[in-house]
Amino acid sequence: MSNLVSPFTLLLVAVAVSADAFAVAVGKGLGMRRLDLRAAGSIAVAFGGFQALMPLVGWLLGSRMEHLVAELDHWIAFGLLAGVGTKMLWEAYRDAEDEPDGTIGWGELVVLSTATSIDALAVGITFAFLPVSILPAVVLIGVTTTTIALVGVLVGHHAGSRWRRPAEFAGGVVLVMIGLRVLLDHTGVI
Image (tube, rainbow, N blue to C red; front, side, top):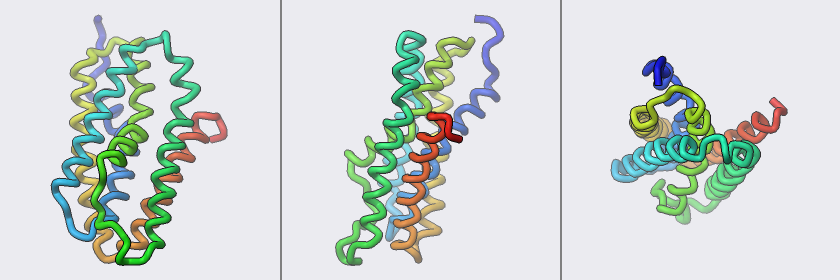
């Protein structure tokens, strides 16, 4: 196709779709008692991988499934983010000896990665109608999100090492608010 979407425009899209991943990564970093580079790397790679996979899936689905995704993506994102956020709020009020050390299980990692990449699925559907070279686009989105999520975990950990319980609470509030924002934005309320 001629007149491909510029690499700069794709970078802006990559940064935009990684915003939720950054916020969630900060929330997870806030809950870490000590910096766990393995967990930070897992979070970053999972978020980046899902952010790269979702636009590819969206692109493959194209216009045939657009109406289904557009009608459900905000409800799916809201439910996943609100559920994980509520769990984080609950954990903020548990006894200190019962609190986790900021590690993340595979199930939670998949849920968070999916929730933060729903918008990328819609972007992929849009790519199906634009002159976009899909493989470089999804690689750029994945690498950008991986980098931004890793920075988010590090920033969150640095800020949260002293204030773990309030930080866990703040992370839960952020997740619920992101889910609510997605829902309100997609239903036309805001």
